[in-house]
Structure formats: C-alpha cells, structure tokens
Length: 456
Ligand SMILES: Cc1cc2nc3c(=O)[nH]c(=O)nc-3n(C[C@H](O)[C@H](O)[C@H](O)COP(=O)(O)OP(=O)(O)OC[C@H]3O[C@@H](n4cnc5c(N)ncnc54)[C@H](O)[C@@H]3O)c2cc1C
Image (cartoon, helix red, strand yellow):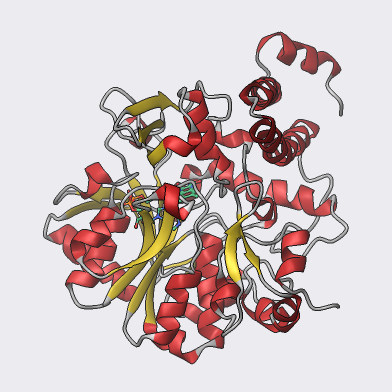
C-alpha cells in the first residue's frame, strides 16, 4: 500500500484537522489553515508531505493502519473490565451534574467536564489543561475558537461550553512536546485517539499527558455553521465577536438549543436552532467528511467521557445533565468522593442507559457506517464490516440524503459567499431540510408522496 501523507488524507476526505501531523513537523513550515469550506487542514511543502507519511501512518486517527479504539483501550485501560459495544471499556457510568459553583450554569450539559478539569488542576494532578477557548480578536486571528493551555482554575472555567467549530491541537501539542509538566487534554473522540496514538510514538507525551477527557460526538462542523447562524440572525459573519452555540434558558428544554451571537458593535442576537435552515443536527449540515468514517461516539480511548443525557426526564430539564463513562479507577474515585461530599450529584447507570442517550449517533456511526463503507471502494478498515443491506431501504435513503446534505452544504455555502447572494445557500438549505424531514419523519405532502413512490 502507498503510504499516505497529509495531503492524501485531505484529498480522500479522511483528515479531520486535528493538527497532530503538523505538531510533529519539526522545523518545517507546515501549518494548519482554514480551507475554502471553513475546515482546518494541514498545509506544507511536498518534501514535508512525503516525510510525514510515517507520522500519518502511526498517529493519524483516520490512518488505515493504526490500532482501532478497542485495541488501544485494551492497552490503556486494563483495569476497566466491563466492555460494551457502545461505550467501549469502562469502570463505571453515571448520569448527573455539578452542584457546587456555576459549572452547571456555564457548561453545555451538567458542567462536569469543566468541573473535572478544574479538580485535576486544583488537586495538583495536572499543571495545565488543553481545551478550547474563544479567541479575543476573531477578526485578527480569522477564527472564533482555538485550543489553549489553561493553567489556572478560572482559565479552565472560562473555556466552558461546546464549540461546534473547527479547532486544532498543533500548538498545544508542540508545547507539551517541548515543556515538561503534567497535562490533561479535553477533546472529541478522534482528537483523543490522535493524542493516544501520539503518546505511543513520543515517550515525552506518554509521560506528560496524564489524563484525557473525552466529549461524546455526533459530528464536527465547519466554520460555516457559525457564519450561517449570523446570516440567519441578519448579521454579517465578519462582525461576529463571539458565538454561544448553546445558551441555557429556563423556558426551553435542555435539548432545545438556543444560539446567541455577540457582534463587534456590542449587540447580541439569539435564535433557537430548530427553525434554522440548518439547525437539525441529524440532517448533517456542514459535517466534516471524515465523520462519515468514524465509529466512535463516546471517545472510547479517553480516561473519562462526557455527553448529554438525551433521555427523559433529563432532556426536559433546561439546566442540563451529563452522562459519564469512566475508564480509570482513579477518576472514578474522584467522582465518588465529590459525590459523597455533595459537590456533584451523580447516579450510577448501566451501559444500556448511556447507549440509549446516544441512539441516533450510534445508528449513524454503526449501521450507517456499515452501509457507507459498502458504497466506497477505498473504505479503510473499521470495527463494523461493510454491508450494503444492513439497513432498511428507508434508513439507507436517510444515510444517503444526510451524506448528500453534508457534501452540498459545503459547496452551496461557498457559492453563496463567493457571489454574495446568501439566498443561494439559504433557499437550497431550506429545500434540503424539508426533503430530509419528509424522509426522516415522513411528514407533510412530500412525506406522503415518498411513502407511495419512494425509491427502494
Ligand atoms: C463537536 C461536538 C459534538 C458533540 N456531539 C455530542 C453528541 O452527539 N452527543 C452528546 O451527548 N454530546 C455531544 N457533545 C458533547 C456535549 O456537547 C458536551 O460537551 C458534553 O456533554 C460536556 O458538557 P459539560 O457541560 O460537562 O461541559 P463544559 O463544562 O461545558 O465543558 C466543555 C469543555 O469542552 C471543551 N470544548 C468545547 N468544544 C470543544 C471542541 N470542539 N473540542 C475540544 N474541546 C472542546 C471546552 O473548552 C470545555 O473545557 C459534542 C461536543 C462537541 C464539541
């Protein structure tokens, strides 16, 4: 097999833009840049690209030859004896939220990620936490969010919130390679996998990255999602100073997302996600291509993973609840001690409960992945086998439509930006969403028509 450099990974839709290959680029001028569709991608000379093939083979989360999540976690978490196909290995699982401080109020779900990251720092278990912050000057940096190392409790708390926006780790990984210390990393599943693969390759990272905190993930979006939010609120994307993708509101259930943007002129604007032309997460607008090849929803290679408790009664409670999958006894003890002290409120649950909170994501990443793999000639090995007939004809249509919406949302937004005609994207997206809803929920006249004549 020809070894793949970063360019080939980008070309074949397998690069998620984590920045791992650039972090290991040594003295070269390789860097992470936004592409024309608002996705972060590695760029560098041909010489670097050729030289980086080994790095990609050993540390890229979408490389065909790296160990899969099961094999990695067998080595990483020998004490986690329970295993479930959805959660991966685990010591314990919980549902709950933070009680102390403003963690729950400031967090996307129950605030447990920021709480645990702060607790690791407060108790001296780590010196710094790599996670995502808002950029102070987006106009200058060209980005709304970036990975940073937080070295104080207030800095960790300042990074709370979920960012459905491209970020990359090259700078923080370079710092961790260069500066001795004990670090924790927060990230989505493929980023944590990249970190674990880099820990295998670099003894310094193996020693220094002492904790990994994973976020469950449905998919990663391009920067155009934030721009589309601005457009639909009647603002210019260039005027955005900050985006809060999930602003909690007592009038709305936790799963009724409300977005708020702050503009440079000091105004703030807000909109619920659901009425947006691209606000239905399941339709796959702006999804990164690599997400079509992912089979890890719950960050199975992280020491501990956190998601939203998307089942009743939790999803109706506007204040937010986490589900937590713990894979090391030390972090489990930390959670249980804090619960006994009344600082957090967590109840034990089983793997089926956790899987139930992510039913849609798991369907897309397992059954849907199996179907997608069967339709590709260049399919990399995954933990599910390719199977063109695994799903019902209805579900196969939804998988195809979701992939088409993802692909075309990048193109249509690019066209609308280039021509400065927002309606090109917005009208297309409205029509795409109506079609998706008709397929997915069999609603309205189009749904009735599809019921009678839908392609098999
Ligand atoms: C792209 C994305 C997709 C997600 N999809 C799902 C899903 O399908 N199902 C589900 O249950 N949960 C999903 N989550 C996780 C969920 O949104 C919450 O982050 C999680 O429940 C933790 O909530 P919290 O209140 O405990 O975290 P908080 O206390 O709000 O802390 C969140 C921490 O994550 C860091 N962070 C935010 N965005 C990113 C990012 N893009 N990359 C790395 N670190 C980041 C922040 O800096 C902060 O440290 C997703 C998160 C992201 C970023």
